[in-house]
Image (tube, rainbow, N blue to C red; front, side):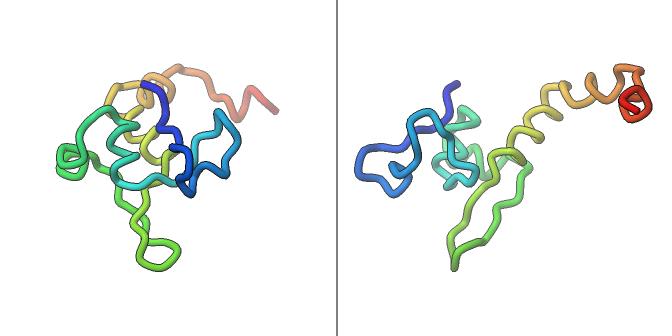
Length: 89
């Protein structure tokens, strides 16, 4: 699924084309995950951030990490058997 894009006239339209904002509203975060907002708020295990006053925003990278854990990608990367810290020295 493509990342949410800014509509013309939206405050996010200041971003260059192709740039996904790091912080997403609940509606944007739900769309990013491919679910409706109610389903997103009930099931997604990522806590929202309260920044810039009372704005409730979701960190896109935190969503990616949560999705990686749900799909098993994170475990597969952790269990590859290579000590990358040691290998990169």
